[in-house]
Image 1 (spheres, rainbow, N blue to C red):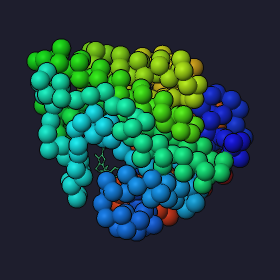
Image 2: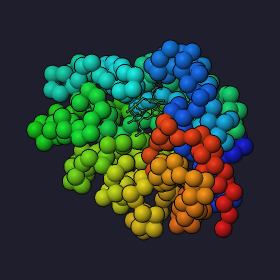
Image 3: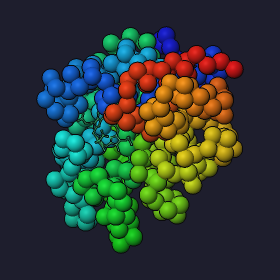
Amino acid sequence: MMLQNDLLLRAARGENVERVPIWLMRQAGRILAEYRAVREKAGSFIKLATTPELAAEVTIQPVDILGVDAAIIFSDILVIPEAMGLPYEMAEQRGPVFPQTVRTAQDLTRLKVADAESDLAYVLDAIKIVKKELNGRVPLIGFAGAPFTIFCYMTEGRGSKTFSVAKKLLYTDPAFSHALLQKITDSTIDYLKAQIRAGADLVQIFDSWAGILSPDQYRTFSLPYIKQICDALAATAGVPVTVFAKGAFFARQEIGQLNCSVVGLDWNMDAAESRQLIPNKTLQGNLDPCVLYADYGQIKAEVKKMLQTFGTQRYIANLGHGVYPDTDPEKVKYFIETVKEYTL
Ligand SMILES: Cc1c2[nH]c(c1CCC(=O)O)Cc1[nH]c(c(CCC(=O)O)c1C)Cc1[nH]c(c(CCC(=O)O)c1C)Cc1[nH]c(c(C)c1CCC(=O)O)C2
């Protein structure tokens, strides 16, 4: 299937583009009333995420309503622990909770390496439906959490400001930590390959908790596993890979040397400095999501500043993290329009 709008893929591959492509992290769900209506109908987040027709519907909503240049499959990074044998619940207002956690070698023996084709068939089915319904309008982004971020949730059992339970394990039981990280990595490689076979045109790895690690710990417990994923996908899949490590400003140079096409940036990472540290890759980001609370004039000024410093080539416009749930969708549309209208 030929894509009518392949700006995102061309920018990712470092090819010339006539304008900057844009999409938003967490564009599906969170801000749209149309999303909340479907979620209501489904009854729960998990029901919605595991019903391929409904997941496909909310995946396509931002393409129709916001006019973004890509869809991202509606799912969650926590489907990997679930497929490994650690089910999660989505507590209203409180986020994900794992009733059981994994903190010892013995806990680990109860987990398996996920088999995407059987354990995550519902995500793959949703991808196939989206590809059919998009009919080539825009590319579809697949995704997974980085092994360290998944490790955080599996060991801690819930969100945390410090993830001190997870980090304690890195210091007190590195052998266990590496064994769990490897099992997550093996599951994730299989899963991302399956997403690509099902039709994902690009995949993004979210290392949402990268910023809580020291540079040394990041080098030991996160980067090597992301590297395994990038190498495995480069060897077999041939679609662009984006690595987004929130807060890992200290690791930009090393991330830039991975076998990936795009590096995602958050708003703490200076554009010019990032270009210098990562000279040979496409950059993605990095507007502070809070800019979208400002008035239209301020949004325009901030977006122009961002585009001027990143330039229009080897660049994908985005926020520096997911869009916040209480953002006015009209402001989001204005952000997207401002990027689309920008020319040098
Ligand atoms: C850390 C993380 C999670 N999930 C995700 C990350 C990495 C990205 C990031 O750092 O923001 C990724 C994710 N989660 C979801 C998507 C869907 C696609 C998209 O729009 O980008 C994506 C890409 C749906 C979701 N995942 C979740 C919701 C809200 C649940 C609901 O509708 O009740 C949605 C739409 C729940 C979730 N899932 C997670 C948390 C902490 C929460 C609770 C709060 C929240 O972020 O909304 C874990």
